[in-house]
Image (tube, rainbow, N blue to C red):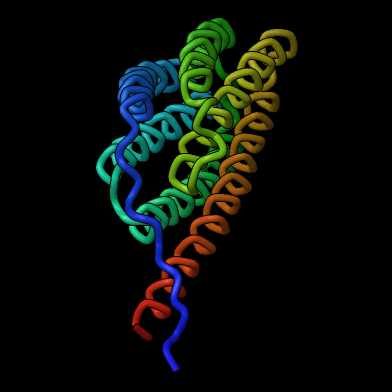
Amino acid sequence: MACSCSHEPAPIKPNSKFRTALWIALIINLTMFVVELIGGAYAHSSALWADSLDFFGDAVNYAISLAVLGASLYWRATVALLKGITMASFGVVVIVKTGYSYLQGIPPEAITMGAIGILALIANVIAAVILYAFRDGDANMQSVWLCSRNDAIGNIAVIIAAIGVFGTGSLLPDLFVALVMSVLGLTGGYRVIKHALAERNSSKAVDKLEECQ
């Protein structure tokens, strides 16, 4: 008796709007990576330094997403899985850096921290608005949206931390925000990993059904 087999949908034709959105987000993130890397080192801010790494990680993620546009579901999900692992790893790195900064005990320079935080927030809001329309796509698109959303939330926290540092002269607000950003990285990474694994398993199941033909 012949098997009744379903088929995996053909690879999605690359969406020109999504491609353009990715290029804009890539340029924004690379620019802010350099700005926050230099600014974070100058201001001795763990939150800015952590955010600069996040910008770099997102830039790499956007570049990878551009590379797999139009690929099969399995490969899009595989790339999303790697991005989810990267997001979670970022969270772990931030936790380690926060502990190191606490041991050093050097409070950050609040004015520089706040000014760069505002600039980064503007950049991330622009990227998040551009990518908002693609938030309900596959795991690859979802991970792109989550990156921008988390960055915007993190930048608001950096600005609040700068106000706290300015008002108290303590490094604790900066460290607290760095920890919040690490949680965002861990939870966002977990969500992307879970979605990507489900899509990979679904793709493999379809392939097995096709073998029965």
